Image 1 (tube, rainbow, N blue to C red):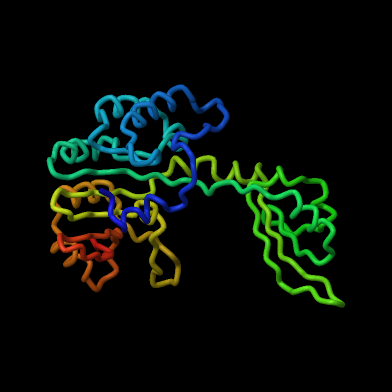
Image 2: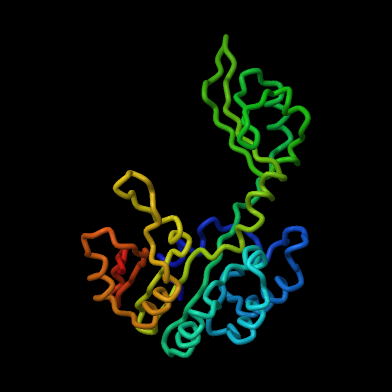
Length: 281
């Protein structure tokens, strides 16, 4: 069963969606049929718990690897993210799948659910003079918004900044996102690997917030931000799940240097949780 901590990541950005969303339009460098063929192999490993979860035990690694190897770099960028099929880490993935007593799940991001604006709200705002409107990140006037209708927006946020009274009108901040902007920003969100969860038979658990890895930076001596994660992080993740050495993880997290590392969350048999930045040479 997925724990409370696991559920936090499963529900991160949760909305009804399918992890294999509509693909971008074809171009000269991308074969959509090859991408679909690869994703079909992955989707056979979908979990009954939620549609944005793949289960390692259900995955036919050899067939998925064969389809993955036929993808170009550009096609891999557009396909469902699953880098553990790369040649230098595939043996560890196969080894992990063969271990009894551990269930490994790959949780994918889900874009926010589109909102529906009531027609009455829209009409009221169009008649309000004091509206600070932002459309797709750009300041616009109410007159410019009159070219749109409520169905043109995927999301909106309305905040009253000043209350109305007998001799004054209420003022509002109105932030809107069009369907076009939403589709552009979130088209590939559902293909991004968010979290890896390893659940052991004795109740212990390892969670790797995968989405944080390439966002982990540190300031160098010149004050600039530099990546602070190990180059071979894919292999490290699988090895840590295979070894399940909590004492070793804690020890490596207590290093005082600026060695690169990975965030790993652990839960022991007593249900105690620890968030560790585990450092590697």
